[in-house]
Every structure is written in structure tokens, then in C-alpha cells.
Length: 590
Image 1 (cartoon, rainbow, N blue to C red):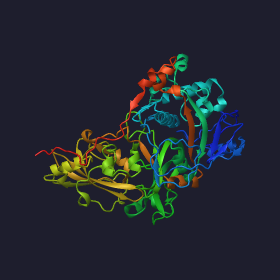
Image 2 (cartoon, rainbow, N blue to C red):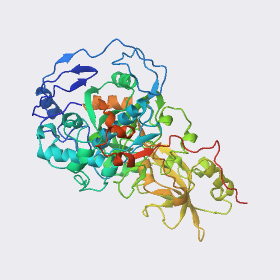
Image 3 (cartoon, rainbow, N blue to C red):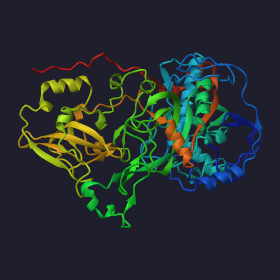
Image 4 (cartoon, rainbow, N blue to C red):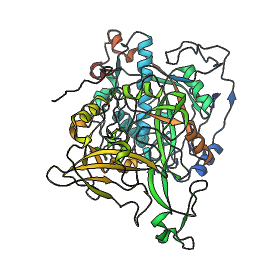
């Protein structure tokens, strides 16, 4: 992504490339007037096009040829470091992922996605080069410090040349930034092991890093040089770069809020918002429902609880987000019907509303899942995504449907249907059902989180869940009351995230995703094209960096003046494969 601003700085020692063609930039405008619109950060998006035009006008570009005629072997879909320089890709495999991706870490309450994306790429290249040179074991990695990187960047941007920095950094906050800032500050900024300053997830901690002292900088063995930055935009160039360079890269994208729509049918036609002559009428989006008016339901997410980003006619730009691209699969088909896309390492937690996160409902998968190298059942051993209602055990199927006409009632988001039932012998309570649910690693018993829709004192079981309308879902439940009357209950049509905020598995059945394996999202090509169609952006920054031999503890004896204790403390082992069996073993209580 191009930087925005009016300042200039001589960066002749750096080669910056765009769209797979190198530029030699004698002057690059990176002023402190960057608008809060960049897509490599997590902040509000306002005047994107105006700022981009200003930046483009301030940059003098001198193009030179960048591709050589060397060939690359594309027989493998999993990446290994290549020693050929600038190889030309003559064909692309239908799926590919780089090897040895470091585990996901989470940004939590702070807008530091750009920081996490930057450190993620550096962690990957450190590991890749360490393994290639025999300085690091393949199952180990060194966790680098996002906290120290952000704090040191703020120190430089508030005391040194502000023209190298994004606006928020000059205002002493990490709430928004660019991956590209590493390029401009590379000669001055330090990269530290995570042990120096572990990440602080709460707000007002942007500059906190007690260990970031002149003495620590002097003895820090980590030294990285940015050789080149290449920006890719179209899917062919992005995939070609992944296969050719075989390294993780930073991806920046516009994020959106989504408005979903209720069609004005049945009893809803009595709602004043469904009167075509009323100013309250919202026209249904084209080619959706066969009604004139629709009732909008705002503030939806542009991703689902399976970790799949979605393109939707109701999208509105909300901000930007940065992640790490590690692969792609041209054949994977999302739940929303999009075929093909990128595999991304994200910096979001999994589940529903953890203590250190805003209100969201999220899920993720492994690289092997997105490459379709394992089945959905095998995936559950590492990434069960227990908070996702689509993964809950359904103990009655279509028999449990008690409400067929879901678009009825005067208030569609509040109506709950209840029917008294005899709980004796109900299949949801049977031992066979429990055993089957456990063998499938699917949560069976649910507890209520939202007293306006269910009873927190009772236990719930999923009868079935059905997709209706504009990505709404009707979930029907068995409401078990051991001391009174039990009921079959159908909640009104809700978005899947709203169901996850209404109910969740009981503590004993709420399995966590493995942080060593999960944390990956899927970004469809259709989503990328939908962004471009709206004038939004999705770009990939390919950082070519070199880690000095002194950066590795294996070479500590050659550099006795450096302190490797923090490197060793930050060296971790990664579990790539969960302990699985072909069938889950469950206890049969007789």
C-alpha cells in the first residue's frame, strides 16, 4: 500500500516495489499528515481517496525492470525457502501455503493489528532463515515483542523525524499505523524478543516497556535489514509472490460493517416501515427479495464464525485491518458460496466476548483445513470452534421444527415461540445422544447468556438450526427444566453471532482452539473484487529482509558482547499436530 503524506526523505538504500515492478525512489513522501484512513491499521476510515491522491502527487516514481528469467519448481504446495533470485513463475499450483508459520497472537482491546502483522512477518522470516542456515530447530521459533516495537516506534516518531511516521504515531498512540513504517524506520528502530516487554492487551499501554533502555539496545543481538518492499494488488501477482518467494507477507484491507435485511412479508406488512408510501420504508437491495420495502438490521460483521470473510451488498466501509497472508486455495468454497481465496493469519481471539476483547463472536481454523488436507471432523481436534452455533450437536433434526413461518410477528427480532413438552424419554437427554455428541466433539448442553431470550437457570439443547433470509438463522431448542415444565423453544431469526451471544456451551463442553495450530482466516477472491468495485483497497506488502547471524543464539559464542538471555527466554516450541485418534474415546455410563 502506498503511504500518504507530504513530507520527503531520501531512501536510496531501499528498493520499494509495486505490482511486482521495482521502483527506485529518490524521494518518498511519508509525511506526518497521513490521514486516519490507511488500510494497514485498525482505525476509522474517512477520506481515503483524497489522501491517496495527495500521496500519489507527492511521489516521484522511477520504474525499472524487476523480474529475471530464472525458473521455480512449483511441484510442492507447501513452501520451503528458495535460494534462486527473482524466479519467474510459469504456472501456479491450485493451492499453496508456506511452511513453519509461527502461532497466532492476539491484539485484544488495542488497535495494533499493523504492529502484529509487522512482527508476524519478522517472526516468520527469522524462523525461515534460522532453519535454512541450521541456526534454529524446525519445531522452535522466537517470539518477538509487539509491545517493544510499538513503544520504540512511538519514541522515534515523537522525538525524531516525524516525516517517517503515520499521524497517530506522532501523537504518541499505537491506535493505527502502517506495516511500511518498518521500512522507513529500519535504520533506527529495534526489534526485541518478547521476553523484554510482553504485550499489554489493555488500553493506555502504548508506550509502556520498562525494559526498553539504552543498555538493552546496546546488548540486543537481534538485527534485521529491510532490503526491499514489494506491494502486490491483483490475485495473480499475490499468489505468484507467495509461490516464488515462499514467505509470509502482510495483507491490509478495508473492513466493513454489514446491513442485513428483513423482507416485509406476513404480519410484518403491518409495520409502518413496510409501507411503501411511508418515508420509513427502506427499499430492498436489488435482486434480493420480491418486496419493495425491507427492514434493515445494522452492524453485522463482514466475516462469519468459521473465519471466512464475506462480500455482501450491504457493506459499508468501517476501517482497516492488517493480517499475515500465508497461502491460498483456488478450490475451497466458503459457507457463503465464494470459491477460492487467501489463507490469512489473524490477530483476533476465538470465541465470544473474552474479558480482554470487544463484543464479537469469532472462530478460526488451521492452515491444513483451508488447504483441504484434513476433514472437518479431524479439524475439530485442534480447532473445535465450540462457540459457533453451527458446531453444536443437533439432537432432533427436522422433528424439532415447531415454527415454519419465521417472518411473522410484529417485532421479528424479539418473538420467541414456546411449546410445552414431556421431557421423559426425550432423545436430547439420552445416553446415546451424549455419547454421539462427545464422539463428534460437538457441544450438547447449552447455557443461557441473554435473559431476554432464554432462562439462565435452565439447560438448553439444540433441536436444529436453519438458515433463512439474508443470512439469518432460526435455532430451535429443547429447554430442559428438571423441576418443572420443559419446552420446545424457537428463537426469532438471528444472525449467527447473535445466537452465539444468546447461548453458549456449558463450561465442561466449551473447548478452546489450539493457539499453536488455529488462528487462520479465509479471504475470498470475491471479497477482494467487491472491495475494488467499491473503490476500497486490499494490498499485500512483501518484505524482503535479512537477519544478521548475530541474531541467533546458536551463534552466541561468536558475539560475546551481546546478551542472548532474552532470545533464549523467548524461544518456544510449536505443536504442529494435535493428539488425535480416528474416533474420539468417550465414557459409556450404564
